[in-house]
Amino acid sequence: MTGLRERKKAETRAALGWAAIHLTAERGYDNVRVEDIAEAVGVSPRTFNNYFASKAEAIASRHLDRSLRTAAALRERPAEEPLWAALTQAALEQFTRGPEVEAMPSPGHAQWVAGVRTMLAEPALQGERLRAAAIAEAELAAAVAERTGTDLATDMYPRLVAAAASAAVAVAMQHYLDSADPPSPIERLITDAFTQVAAGLPAPSH
Image 1: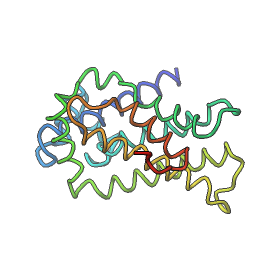
Image 2: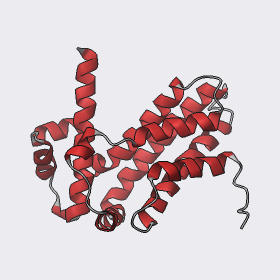
Image 3: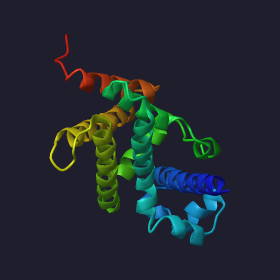
Image 4: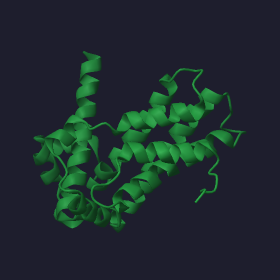
């Protein structure tokens, strides 16, 4: 029962986070209330407040939770798997469409991109996004340290890997937003970004 309860909580959190993003991209940050997000998911505003302190935290939660799951997935990858291959697979696992997206699908690419860009430029979100990114990167660094037998206190390596992996995902997602319609699949962009980083970012041949 504990496992079922935790899964239901994770599903509710994911649904609230996605609804916050979806409605903000559609209407604009100032035109979305906590009550609107809760109603879209079919829960009460009080339930929303059990998960998040603000709509900014709810919006930032999707990236944070995906990154935390990446760290957890990395810990589960086979020990003999090369680090960047394991990181790539751990990251890709988190980009499958969840039931929250199926229940509230995003609109056409051009409309969605315009809304997301406006949302990401919202000053009220910046502090929460930075906080989420710092937590996510620290957790990924801890997982890398465990996998590589390095020490977070004395070795730069795990933090460098975590920062590079986080940057690779961020650049892939930005490239997706900047792509023409239809965009390249995000999974392909993430794989390409990780492959280039793992190769040491060699200069392009063309």
